Picture 1 (cartoon, rainbow, N blue to C red):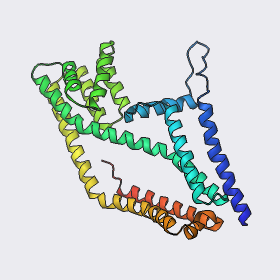
Picture 2 (picture 1 turned 90 degrees about the horizontal axis):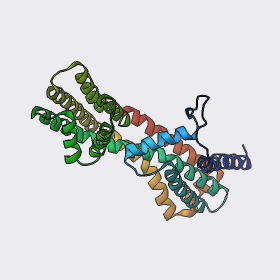
Picture 3 (picture 1 turned 90 degrees about the vertical axis):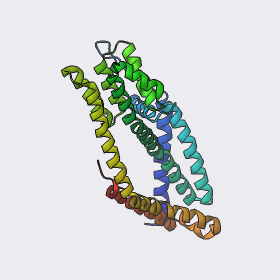
Picture 4 (picture 1 turned 120 degrees about the horizontal axis):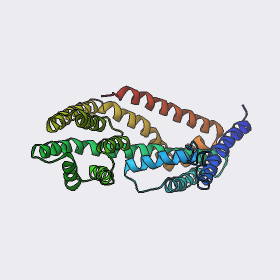
Length: 301
C-alpha cells in the first residue's frame, strides 16, 4: 500500500467517524418527541430519545446535575480541543490531521468510561453507608418504630448519596405509591445486588410476615461479609491492577516526554505515515494487553 493511499484511508476514517459524530450530536437536539400510536399513547422510543433516557438514568446514578445535551456539548468541546492539540503536534500536516482526529474521537468516546467511573464511585459510597443504614433501621424497629419512620431517620441523619436515594423513596410513599412498589423502584434506580437483596427481603416480609428487625440484621450482616470479601479480593489484586495502569500509561507518558525533549524525532511517529501506523499498532497492543490484565484481575463476588 502506497503512502498516499494510506493517508487517504486514515483521512477518510477521520472524516466519516468524527464528522458523523458531530452530525449526530447536532441532530439529536432537533429530534421531535415520540409519535403517538393508534390508541393515543406514545410509542416506545428506540432512537436517540431512548439513548437519552439511558443517559439521564446514568447521570442520575452518578449524582451529576447535567442533561444529556450538556454532557455531549462539554465532551464535544474537549474532543475538538484535544484534536487541535494533536494537529499542532503533527506539524499541521496530513499525519497531524489523522493523529488529531483519532485523539479527538478517542476523547469523545471516553465520556462513556468517565460516566461509568462516576456511577461506580457513587455506588461504592452508597454501599459503604448502606450496611450502617440497615443497622439503624433494625435498631429503630426494635425500639417500636415502623419501617417508614426508620427510613425517615436514615434520610435525616445520613449524608449523600444514601440520603438522596431514601428521600426519593419517601417522596414516592407520600404520593401514595405502595411500599412494595417504592422499594422495587429504588432497586431499579440503583441497580446493586446488595440493595436488591435488602428490598426483596422487606417485600417478602411484608407479604408473609416475620421479625423485621431480625431480617434487617441478617441482611446487613450478609452484605457486610460480602463487602469484606470484595475488599480482600481488591487488596489481593492490587498488584495486577497497578501493573495494568503502569503498562498502559507509561508508553503514553514516555511518548509525550520524548516529544517535549526531541520533537523533530518523536514527531515522525505522528507525521510520517509509517510512524503513524506504528503508533496505531502500539496503541492497539497496549489496549489489548490492558483488556487481558483487566479480565485476569476481575473476580466476581
